[in-house]
Amino acid sequence: MARYQAKPREDGHGPYRWAHVVRTPKGFALGTIYRQLGDDLTAKEAENLADLCAREGFDLRRAS
Image (cartoon, rainbow, N blue to C red):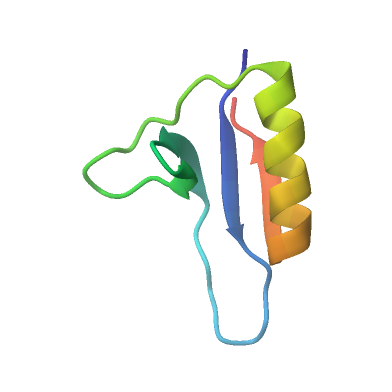
């Protein structure tokens, strides 16, 4: 299980910050100032998240 961070791809309107990925009842979301720590995702969830980020135009990295 691992934590991940995502941010919108640079489009000239940035700079964008990395935000932790959290689980919500509707799927994945970026963390807010009220919830800084990301959720531990399983390998299957991480694969789904990578597909979603590629499709929606987000960069994804594994948080250390």
